[in-house]
Amino acid sequence: MGKGSGYGKVILFGEHFVVHGVPGIVSAIDSSTDAEVKKGIKGLNIKDERKTAKGYSEEKRLQQVESIERMLKAMDLDPKTPLDIWIGGTLPGFSGLGASAASSVAIARAISQELNLNLSNEKINAVAYEGEKAYAGNPSGIDNTAATYGGLMWFKKNPAGGQDFVEKIHVKRPIEIVIGSTGKVANTKAMVEGVAERKKANPKKYDPLFKQAENLAVAGRKALESGDLKKVGDLMNENHRLLQEIGVSSKELDLLVDMARKQGAFGAKLTGGGGGGCMVALTPGKDLQGKVASAFKTAGFEFLSTKIGVVTY
Ligand code: MEV
Image (cartoon, rainbow, N blue to C red; front, side, top):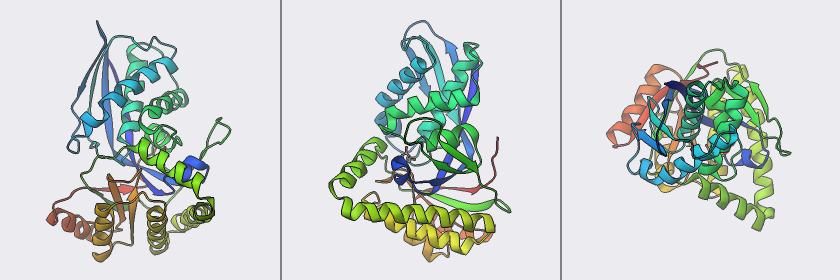
């Protein structure tokens, strides 16, 4: 049997903008998706035992099969190779946490082990990127890169399609965050396509917003590296406003973001594709983290208390 894992992630700056070549900042979180793969007899048998938001597995099933077939092709294997696949792990299947990329990396690693392919991390990342296309249409590659390598990183897509530009970001100490889930499953592909269409139709509005997103990522990196967490929070708030302007936030996301800020979070924004899914609040220190988490709990939302800047490969 082959086994593999992939990290979940939160995007601190630049989701959606990264698809169009703007830099972004992403951190892996200490929750992962695990996969086990055995050679099968007929077709793909997938046993998905992840804890998920209601309807997540059903909504993603077709994309999941397409993703695995794409990955097999990218490994120069027959896309109809019979396999028995188990998926589980500690990363919940909430939209926005990179659950699809984490599962692609986990499955690619498990297939590599089961079939003795000995794939390097670089190749696993490239294979998972192919898998991500089934979920996101035209992904930037930020999610699979975080899922493969872990850590806190600066990511810029290579518009020519070659090697992306990735750098580790170092912080003085890991920083507490709370991830709040709206409980709504979102379709990343539709969200990414929507932004691309609106950007094309209205460059006068969108071009300056994309420039602002780039400035925010640059300033966010500086603030993270110098340990100015108040500034990081302010910039995350600003980033949320840009995401609202490009039409990817939702009523529930805005509610969770407001709730976190009222409890004293340094900053809060949606994370990932939006349109449902998750938000992230920057809550340095255990006390502040607990305060925000208990507000979410009282209001009936699921959440994950974790840290950024911890996991490194
Ligand atoms: C999804 O986690 C992040 C998006 O920017 C899509 C992508 O970068 O592939 C919305």
